[in-house]
Image (cartoon, rainbow over all chains, first blue to last red; front, side, top):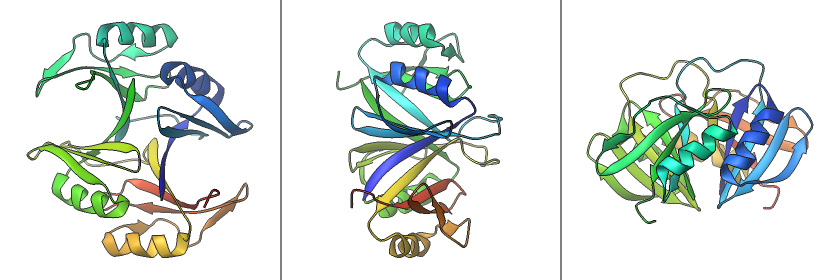
Length: 115
Length: 115
C-alpha cells in the first residue's frame, strides 16, 4: 500500500507554481489542465482541477515543520500565501502559524520539535 | 523541512480506530480527546478534534494505491468506510473507487501503477 494526497484547486498552474516553490517538490507528471503530480520530502501530492471554489475551512491540511517558523512564514508570504492569524499559536509546547495558499487552503507552519 | 498532514474529526477515538486499521498506522502520541498522532508508510497524519461536522466535499483527500482495488475497498467497508459511488472510475488508464471514512471524509482507492 502506498499513501498519497490530492488537493483540489481551481487554477492548477497557479497551485503548481505555489506548491512546488513552497515545499520544494518536483513535478512527476501532468495531464494538461487537469492534474499535476508532485513529490518530495517523502510525500506525493497531486493537484486536481475542480470547477468549484473553496467555501469552508478544509478538513485536511498540510503541516510544515521547520526550524525557523517566522522566516518560513515570510518566505511563504513571498510566494503568495497569507497569514490567517497575525499572532503565532502557542499550545501544548508547540508554536505555529496558520496560513492559506493562494486559493485559501489552510496550511500550518510549526517549529520542528526534531529540528 | 518535514511535511505532515492533519485531519479534522469530531470523534477522535472513532477516527483513530478507523485510520490506524485502514492504513496500518502506528500511534506516536496523543493529547487525550484532542489530538492523536499517527504514522506509517512514510506518512505522518494527525487527527485533530474539532467541534464542527463535515459539510462539503473535502478539498484535500487521501489516496491509497493498492494491488487489488476491489479487495481493498471491501476491507475498508468492513472497517466502517462507505462507497460514494457503486462503480469504479476508469479514466487516464487508472481505476479507482471513491469512499468515505466514518465521518464522511473522502478517500480514493486506486490500482497502484507500480504494483
